[in-house]
Image 1 (cartoon, rainbow, N blue to C red):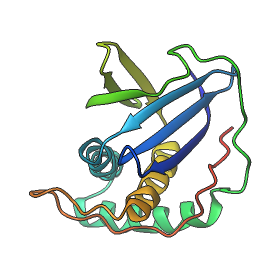
Image 2 (cartoon, one colour):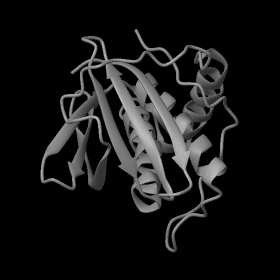
Image 3 (cartoon, helix red, strand yellow):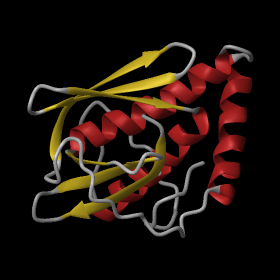
Length: 168
């Protein structure tokens, strides 16, 4: 599955984030993310970005490069593209609750989302796509006024628009 767009919105009635993904083949996947899962995704994304950079650089250099790339991503990501509607929902039109997140780190970053119905969806993400997802989820954390769960350090929130980015 090749991602085209991401979209997220806070559902105050459910106290969850509705996270939607579009693919280049015109499919849409819908998920509900709890506070715990959202913080796992944001914390995991930040850790994986540093891990990628540490392959070629030292720890301090990797941290500095990550901050620089984050600033660049904030300026370059286009959050003003309308989310493309589709009528093709491989997992159904009703959002599925994500129960767990598993990170696989090979040549690419892979996120496995364990769904309430027992299925597992794998997402292959580039570093830039991971950064965009992270910015979008951080914005949703701020909108939901969620605090980091006990034992998890709070993540700085990047101020970005709510409209999803366009990926090529």
